[in-house]
Length: 304
Image 1 (cartoon, helix red, strand yellow):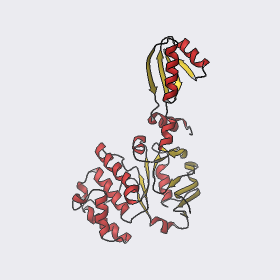
Image 2 (cartoon, one colour):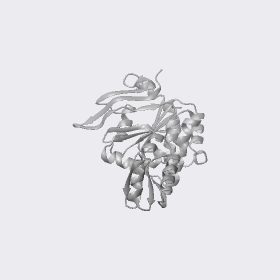
Image 3 (cartoon, helix red, strand yellow):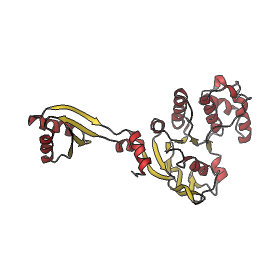
Image 4 (tube, helix red, strand yellow):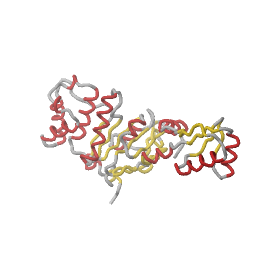
């Protein structure tokens, strides 16, 4: 049995000789929150539209739930919910009435409306006209609409775009509960690393239509590990001592820079320098932030 809820192979989309998406190989596991990350214009929305069968790929294949989207589109999409860009709604109608219109199309039971409103936290506002909702509430209503069909997979395209910090927090917490409480696999696209980092378990980074990183968030953190800075007396002599002991180090002004090392090894290095009468003024980790790493990846096209 296929272990991937979504698997694409060589997925590509070309417009007028230019590739918006090129040779994309996504792998998204059941029960995961997959952060699809990249700058604006990188190809995220184009990819999601291909996953939903809204546009035809120029090449490659899409398998969802282990089935080919090209052949099993209707049966697959009955199990998928989506929110692409901004949700549409009837402003003069209440949340209940908006959801009722969608429920009738999907053929879901009437009780499903109460259930999804509770999930997204709109029960108390259910009878108000939607035109009076905040942007965050409208986004939550959009997610409620996507949940009406009891999906096993949820595709959310930039769901926090334009929200204030409070709205972002609400949507983030809502997304995090999907796999845990409802067994739903989630793909969330964003151009903000901070949002993906706080939500997703796995991340795929797309740059100019090409996937340049795909792994767990923890592995991305490992790539961002920094160096240790030792500010010492007589740095030239201290560097020579460390190099004779086989320690990889370079001098940076009055500091000795070490590649990231574990605490016991660092303690031995400091002890050796002190025993040779070097004064240690400061020991600190110079850590590259995930934001720096992300900008490096999308700016230089570096593949990890």
